Length: 439
Ligand code: DLL
Image 1 (cartoon, protein in one colour):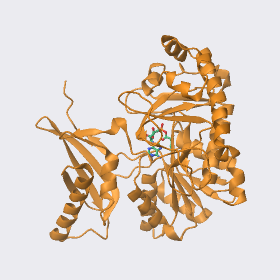
Image 2 (tube, helix red, strand yellow; image 1 turned 180 degrees about the horizontal axis):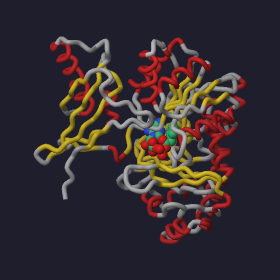
Image 3 (cartoon, helix red, strand yellow; image 1 turned 90 degrees about the horizontal axis):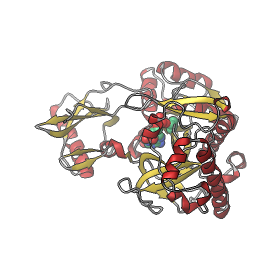
């Protein structure tokens, strides 16, 4: 690793593990006391379990603490989980979610510094530096993607192009004219940018872009290959959520073997989503995160609903902070078809093993004879598009087989012409749920 990159990655990335655990414990004790003393919700929850902050004597004691969930943020909307007076809060963000009121998150000046620091460490770990020109094409506004990537890029000293989402042709023009070398956006939007560039006669592979920082939605290895090949870049998976801070909770390094969690600020655990039992490193389950140094709105044992595992083995890059695997799914994304559990991400992984298929697809759920049914509409590439029925039928069969080999079910696949599925600028909407609700 060159020195410039190492300098930008805080020493905490490479801290001896015992030192890191000491730091985590000290911060955990402090944040639990802060939450207990200043947030009625946490105090009540801990009192119900007969727990006092002083009961947290070791890191393992974290498992004694009660979980928190998205519904707790909704129930206390807007500021019920704030642990500091409003005069200390310098920024609010919100996440819309699927139902009703948004959830609101708050930051002190120091919280924003932590956020910029972790983003900076992440970007540096992906090989970006002050010599780069970074276009931020995540949405700016209440969504944390835009400003999170923006402040991290500025902290790195890079030149930031705050493009936000939308106006896709102009995005491509800016990339070309400014000589952009790094792009931050959702993977589905980057795919759209590659297509739009091609339509304007621009081959993204010929632009100076080297690095893409992609997250905010699940994406598969097949998608990675399409993005890297389509634009001649190296793609990095970045993870985060508003409730914890925004983007920058975890990110891949150049080894691309899982995302390093900035453990000095976010304490990860994996639990069995059904029983709540803590699982050992390496086992798949639901990611639970505790903020160790966020003071406006500390989150204690927040159940993310994201399914992954902790990778504790040392990474070749030398970072001592542990990794999480690609987020394979959200526990609330699962649907049950003919008794089989299916996640949208499994369908994407299967689809993209078939040549001629693009990462533009829609999963449509319906009810037939009182049972859940599924159909996948798949957009095929211009090259694979043919007017010969036989060729299309064989492609359809291959896709069907690929999906069956992953989920164990034969489902209906419909091929659709190139450019017919609506493109998204932020998080892609992959599932259309037309099921009739019972009861
Ligand atoms: O999506 C923050 C973010 C912005 C992350 C930009 C990365 C890049 P929310 O809108 O609160 O925040 O949504 C958080 O998105 O719980 C995951 O389910 C999903 N998600 C985020 N990153 C990834 C990823 C932002 N890399 C929710 N892979 C999370 C899979 C992701 N899912």
